[in-house]
Image (cartoon, rainbow, N blue to C red; front, side, top):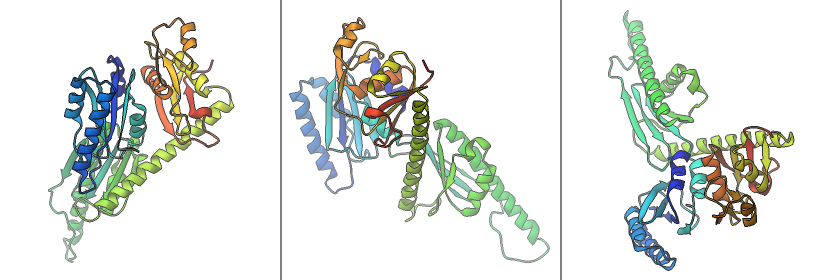
Length: 367
């Protein structure tokens, strides 16, 4: 699931019902809690005038308490157009939005933390490669094993010992080459940004040596585990999450440094809501930046086209746009960015390099 997939929702006629549902399963009565939440949701949907067909379709797709931390549902006119799960729980038991646009900003923000990545669990005979894109479960799982003999060195003397050891080293080398081929293929499948490897030290050394140049900067190793399921699984999971968090932090720092430089030059940066809207109207935005310091309750106005957006209703009328709808400002910004081919980045606000109002953009070109 990526921006292109989510942007297809804008082609559906609204109004939309969007639900963020807590589906955590880490308590003994998780199933009962989820059932209670859903009964409350059905009641609230009915009170907001949502039709029975749409409620029934949402109920069919709600999932259960094994679906990670959050279930995200988007429906319109009796059909569910998006049903996705996120590993982290929402801030409340559930949130419902009914409006002209789907409520996608929280989902896009959460997905921004889920960097496409590989987890490689290796030993000297091969590896298990798990590919993650979004959600708590791997999108792809592959393995390779080298059954070539010999695989293990022995502590014995004699004239054949050196040749035997060389044969073992060659077996390990071949295993590493097989693992690297698998890593290349799976990384290409999901456009992996990070490759996190754990397991036997010698195996990891050989894999690193055989990696092609375009993957070496993405490759990192962690300790604490290998291919077999044991008590180290939780440790590996913690280290994977920390590695991904560090990657997000590094990317954020680099993005804001670039933004600050461009803003200082008054060149290819828009600062604040109004300047960003004007850049989006011209298809000028390369990267939309939304920080957690923005006013998430601020409303704005949109029209039939994604670039029809303004802070005031009268501004759209001045542009000759008579068909208008009110929506959250950040949702209108997100729609305009995706529909004009811009990236969207959610970052920490309240620091010197951040844009004013928590809203800004890097531009494709300067005026």
